[in-house]
Length: 63
Image (cartoon, rainbow, N blue to C red; front, side):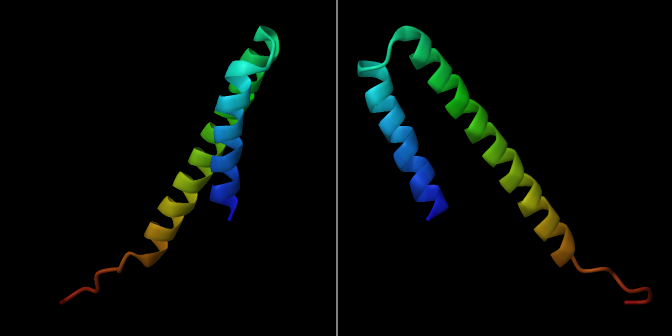
């Protein structure tokens, strides 16, 4: 549900931001959106890396 909300927000900002906002607000809104998307990407990457490290099997000696 969070991903869908982020997708709808992005689509709304692209549609409304390119047609209705003044240039200053347009630039600020795209910078804010880019920052949020970058942070979300980094958080999910770290969570996925942490999850993959926890599921790796530890080799046992002699096998």
